Length: 73
Image 1 (cartoon, helix red, strand yellow):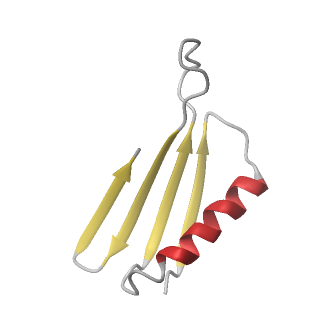
Image 2 (tube, rainbow, N blue to C red; image 1 turned 135 degrees about the vertical axis):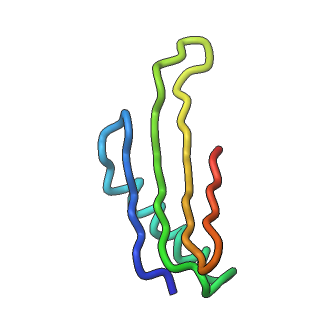
């Protein structure tokens, strides 16, 4: 069971709807592994890129015994 989930917003306003969507996906993650102790999800909007529109980056840091996993997209 994931005991601690932290959602961090960088460069964009905090949105309860987005945070709820993140927590729903965290619940799905629990089906795959019961070893995840904590998660840190970073949602950020870097500088405005007028050629590509709004670009968002999402990072997930998972703390698992004997492992730290970092995923960015």
